[in-house]
Length: 93
Image: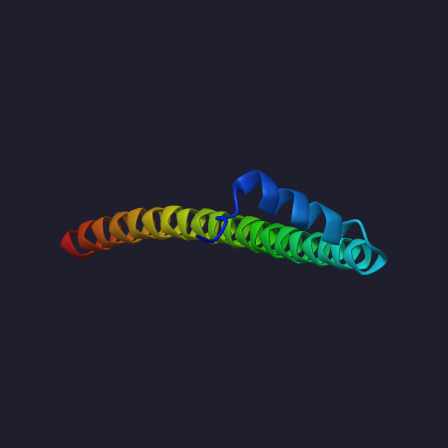
């Protein structure tokens, strides 16, 4: 019967292999790669957040502009109505 490797023996074998120079270099490379990946992810999240803030700001500015225009239209319609009423009164006299 073959000896079945246990988890402890496997972990010890991995630890021995990682304790070599090449193992240490692999670990350092993996850590650098992970750090780079996290940095890229963080940058993309921050960029998306900034874009979202700009979009929200522009949307609010557009809404404010539309509200001002709507108020101006209402005021102009009131003036038109008053002028029409005055015109009707002037024609009746």
